[in-house]
Image (cartoon, rainbow, N blue to C red):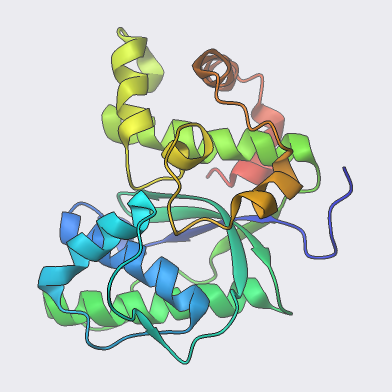
Length: 240
């Protein structure tokens, strides 16, 4: 497969000072809403905190919500192919639809979420490190490896931060991964069809019509990762 002019990129945004900003359900939900709304226009100001968890859950479940979420709507700035929200950072695979689409989109998310976060927690200043990290994905193989890295490895970090020392119960671990709603694993490897990701035909354009849903292959991916057989991919995984 030959990629289009605007190649998909792995993007990481990370909070300053290693601050954990994605531990509270309301904060994760607000970020999910910002991820969706900033791609399509300007987030509506009349989104109350008490509604944001409900809104985020509906978006993740692929359901329509009954009120307008954005003002000044426009076509998507980027196609979101994957995402994961983890502790002090968030991962994306993004393909821009306009010139400089990725920096425009990331800036909107950073500014809008920082405004919300700073107001809620009575702090000032920037919330995310600059510059954010980005790596273009040149091949389907790189894209597929990064999809698993984002959706499998990062959810395992939440399941058990010391999982690299060994996982006693793989079924329990992958039950957690497959049920972790603040990532695109349920969309790419399960049956969920969230409103966050680009439509299925766009995703299939990049990864093919048969997105692998085999848990065994995801286990194999992790084993290769642990055995350093995928060390060459550090440049696209954006590891420290």
